[in-house]
Each structure stands twice: as C-alpha cells, then as structure tokens.
Image (tube, rainbow, N blue to C red; front, side, top):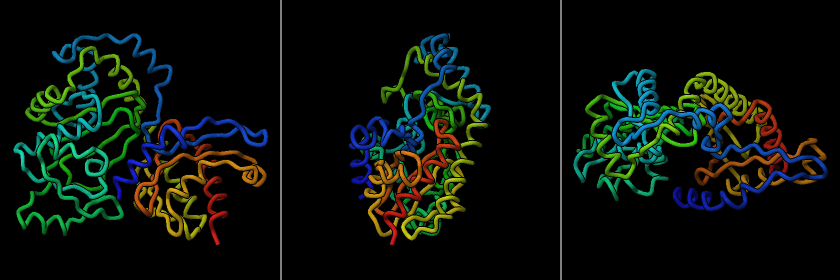
Length: 345
C-alpha cells in the first residue's frame, strides 16, 4: 500500500500539483511547495561557481573541485574519506553492497524507510540482499525489541555505525534510529545533483569500485561539485532556519486543535513534519490544500496553494527547505486552518 501511494503521488507530480500560480479574484496565487526538499533550485552564486569550476576527470580521481568537496565533507563528518556519487539512491545501494558483501545477506530496516518503499527493490534485484522491514516508532527509530528478536533468530546483526551520507540536493533529515547500515545526514545545500558517501578508507575504496560498476563514474563532475561547495558554506545557517520553520508549523498546526490533523511535536527534530490524518483520506486533504477558491480569498485575503504528498494511508509529509521562508510557513498555516475548518464538524 505504501508503494502504491508513493507511485500514485509521483505520477501526479507533473499534473495536478505543478500547475502554474495564476490568480484568483485578482489576488496572485502564492505556491508553498512542501512536497520535498528536492524542490530547491541553485541560486546565482551556485550558477556562477558551476560556470567557473576547474574540472578534471573524476573517474580517474583527477577533478580538483570534486576532491576539494570530498575533503571538506570528510572533515565535516569526521570520517577518513568521502565519495561523490550521482544520486542518493545510488549512495544507499552502494552502502548496502559494501556492508552486505555476499548475495543472500540480510538487511534490517524500517518499514517506511526510503530504501524499502521508494528505491524499486534495488537491494534485492541488484545487490541480492534480503530486506526485513521493522516497525517504525513515532520518533523515527526502529523497534529495537523486534530487532533483538530477529537477531536472536539469526536474521541479522546490530548496526555498526561505519558510514555517513550527505545528500547534496536536499535539505537534510537526520534519522533517529541507529540500526540501518547508513546514517543519513542531509545538509541544506540546494545543489542540483549528487550525494556524498563517507567512511573509512577501505570502505570508500570498495564504494569507488561499486560506483563504477553501477554506472556512477562521472568525468568533469566538478561542475556539480562547485555548486555543492557553495551550499556547504552556508549549510549551518540554512539548517537552523529550516528547523525553526518546521517547528513553527508543527506547533501552529497543533494549536489549530483539529480532530483531523495532529503532530507528534517531540518527533519534529529536523526539517520534516509528519502529519497524522484521521477522518479524511490524505489524498483529499492534499487536493484541498492545493486548490484555491473565491471563498478562501474572501475569508483570508490570500490565494495560497500548498503542495504536499500523502505519505501513508493516514499521514502526509511536509518538508521545509531553503526556498520556504518564514512568511511561506505562516501562509501555509493559514491555508491549513481554512481547509480544516471546511473539513471539520
């Protein structure tokens, strides 16, 4: 069911949820896109850095800009080395293949994790690894009691924190669990592409081989790395702002005291807010949030479209990033208030 929701949502990205801003009753429509932190776009400084990047062949380890990015990231993460790869999904797969060296190995992961729901079964189809989804607890951690039972039955071993990962397009999300073979650390870089995988020297050497085997060896990749370097320089400030906006939204939504939507406030630790939805399908809530009516303009004085995705059968996910301001957050809250009043008793 989770895969079905994700697939249906993805198919509508280019249709229902990406229509132009337009206007309603003479009031310009403002779009607040909370679907994903992949919606960020490189700014002027990034574009200049890309145009002026000094490049070489990264497949030979000779791109100076990529090497600079990898060095800075290793220092940031406190690891020996990092490796620049084209996508987060590839970084995940490489990590699994480095840890699970033999086909038929066992992988324990959360039942709502990206690896399980969104990555097309790559760990099974390509790596030959059998995954065992575990229940996710409210704070994003895995059910450690169930993990212990599975380990006792010989289905796996506890997580040993060996590698780190940075996604360069996205705005960060730190996993609360310490069970997956990957610890996610997504920084608010807003770069157009790429991810960094980090760990001990021997781990990165094997990751380099697997990157090549998976078709991820790039040549003049410094054009992309240059944008990431610009984003990395302002990452800490972006992180703090996005976290503050997410906190403000979560508290504001809870203050609406709607029986339809609720938030587990202690679980809101990064830029993602999971909203529990009861009494109405998440799909319907998303549809109403992205629709503007004359009634909304008359009541609120604004025409706002909030774009987001159903996450499960009873939840939606909202994600803050560098293109969402404090004002956007307040407008989104007003829109939620309007929609919930319409849906409420």
